[in-house]
Length: 192
Image (cartoon, rainbow, N blue to C red):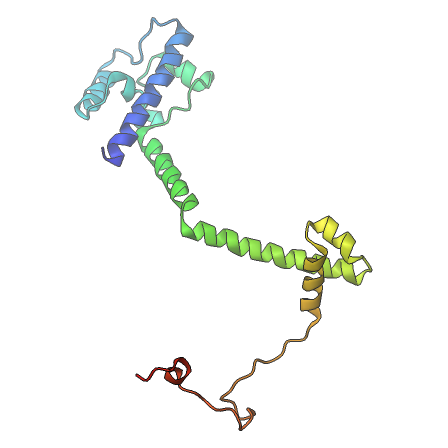
């Protein structure tokens, strides 16, 4: 089945449920549409589109349908807030949004966003650990409060206090002259 048919089937099920509530509210003996030429023309157009009379009450702009339905349905719909009266177009928009949300929840982008958030939270945690240590809290007390081991807290504090050192670059002008570059084939004992 296509997405359109799935959405239409779900919307038709929604309409049937809402109208069952309406018929329960009214005792089951009522009509949805007035017996007027305008209402009959509207129902003929809806029928040509493949809609039932019940579905036609939930199809089209509210200001147009409001004047075509019976006063019982209008009172239930508007005055008693019996239904939200979601049209098929609105149903499809909501279903598309729900599908996008499901796709987002299952995507790699969401996982990457969560990892990025975790990184930021870890940096905030480390800053709080450093703040507590600078104010005299013991590593054991910090470890208990944050749920880490004392050694992890010690490592976080030690890493934050070590100045950044430039990495050794064998090709720089400051490199010792005794550095000998060995071909990869010589390291593995093979000649290519």
